[in-house]
Amino acid sequence: MFTTTTTITITMKYQLLTLLIISIILSISLISAAEDYNGEVEEELSLWGKIMSWFRGIFGSNDSSSILKDFDGKVEFYKSTSCDCCGGHSEYLKDQGLDFQIIKMKELSSIKEGYNIPPELRSCHTMILGDYFVEGHMPAEAIEKLITEKPDIAGIALAGMPPGTPGMPGVKSEEWIIYAVNHDRSKYEFMTI
Image (cartoon, rainbow, N blue to C red; front, side, top):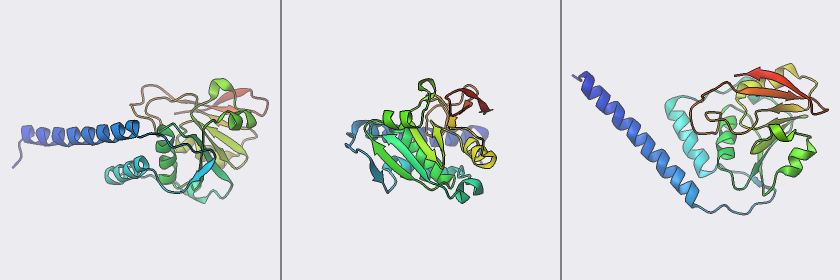
């Protein structure tokens, strides 16, 4: 029979083991040199993506959505060759059921300017979803709302790289404000998570 102390000790060992594995993975990804891609399509999961998918499978956070699975429009995920968190976000979206191509580029400013994304709302990667842009580490529920409501806007954006957002390390410490961006670059609050 386990005592409370024994249970706490076992739980702490598993938490320490998990932190050790994550530290090793992060060290490997920081040490490895980024390959020079320029607009090449990534067809298989990165090592980081495979490991994160494995962890999500074990801990049961694989919540797939029929809205994302059923989306049949064009979806392209543009990411920088030097950004690891973009891979985490793309794997999160794939786990949610969204099917898309990953296109690695050295510089994303041409994509962001081409879709008229305001500079103050830009993040490290941009997804094109049908006629919309989706900027940043966007939670699936915001994308589902965009697909379902089909507003007359250019796209949605979650500025920067807030801790705890899909693909980003850390813990959520504040509300995430997702902005709708009109065709004239004006914006309004689309939703708060």
